[in-house]
Amino acid sequence: MTASKAAISVRGLQKHFGDKRVLSGIDLDIHAGDVTCIIGPSGSGKSTLLRSIAFLDPYDGGDVHVFGKLIGWRETPLGRERAGARELAEARRSLGMVFQHFHLWPHMSVLDNVTLALRLVHGVPRKQAEETGRAMLEKVGLSTFADRRPESLSGGQKQRVAIARALAVRPKAMLFDEPTSALDPELVGEVLSVMKTLAVEGMTMVIVTHEMGFAAHAASRVVFMDSGRIVEEGPPQTLFATPKSERLSQFLQTWRERAL
Amino acid sequence: MSGFVNDIPLYAAGLATTIAVSLLGIFISVIVGIFLALALRSRFRLIAIPARGYIEFARGAPLALVLFLLYYGGPQFGLLLSPHVAGIVGLGLYGAGPFAEIFRAGFSAIPKGEQEAAEMLGLTPGQSFLNIELPQALRVTLPACVGQTINLVKESAVLSVITLGELTKVAGTISSITFAVVTPYLTIALLYWALVETIARLGFYAERRFTVKGS
Ligand SMILES: Nc1ncnc2c1ncn2[C@@H]1O[C@H](COP(=O)(O)OP(=O)(O)O)[C@@H](O)[C@H]1O
Ligand SMILES: [Mg+2]
Image (cartoon, rainbow over the protein chains, first blue to last red):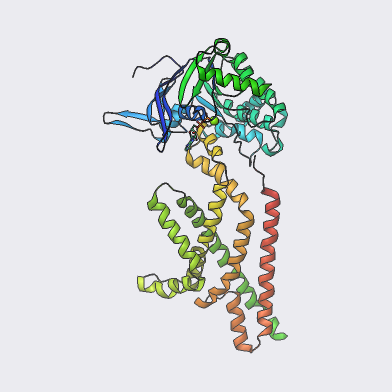
């Protein structure tokens, strides 16, 4: 397998849950600085694709290279075997992940949420970690919330803390799985605007989203998935204005009707 | 009444023994309970099934039976234990089952995504367990743990069957010497009540201090 120049390179990716095939051969190259939005109907495999890239869902066919490293598997002369925990952590080091339901740690302060990995994984002394942590909170507009508990924050604030937490360890690419889907409509904007800033700064981002407006404005590329395959992809203007496939036209039609 | 005053040191010693043996026994219960709870959710059946079996056994076996097995049955297998050690270990093994059930529920109440978030940030499974899972599991299970602690303190009365000089044994001894029944047993009833009340209050205080809602 030739190492691709892409930041994240997905080749022939397959994933089954039991007998059920959820991803049937995905090929996707994400280049440094790309903002890739993945859209598609519910159940089409978008989350599974993202989680396979992070190896949170171990894929069972094909390969995923993250900044040149095969993630989750190790090639041996006898075939493939699962990478060890340390190897996996090493390959994941350049990835940050943001989840639909935030998954902040509720028993710690906001600042501790943001600094825990710096201190435990990267051995940064507390004082220095907290400086970085405060800078990250500042970046997401929550510098005054450092000592609060997650439970006292709104959904939008929680998601921004989750973004700060992921950014604190300086990932080279960020994966977002429906980051605004669990939010009340009036809180969506504050999270999208943080993401837009990141995009402008050149962060490599892969975003599963239903926010077509965001995809249209912020994405460098949109990928449309259905039934475990990539059906169509391209720049947002092209994809939204002139969908080639029946399924994408249908999907966009449904979305427009709902938006009205 | 002068008899009662003379007996105060006996009651005090009994109370001290009850407290010490219960605390140590419960400590063992909690530690073994945590490991059993972890074993229960193991992917490996060779680990999960024996843990389940142990918990079922501990649910069915009365404490007196566990103590008899350890204290009177142990020597047949070269296991000679003092009443104190047999009492502590017996209470510990007996209490581990219910504590395991409590912690299993506590661990499973933590959203899996919190571990995934930790994993993505590079925490090892051990770091994630110690920093994310265990502190939360201990917090959510605090009320149940306090209840179970109180149960075990009361059940420690059974330790008198292996001649251990705890409160109930003291009452029995005093009663057999003085032929008084009401005074010694009322006295220890009061002491058990004070002990249980203290634990409940400490638990209540800890709950108010540590409990957090999910995010
Ligand atoms: N852990 C799992 N076990 C079994 N089936 C799963 C699991 N996760 C997802 N699936 C199935 O895989 C398919 C794709 O799911 P998902 O990737 O979550 O889709 P999307 O994110 O596009 O809505 C769905 O049919 C879903 O039911
Ligand atoms: Mg999804």
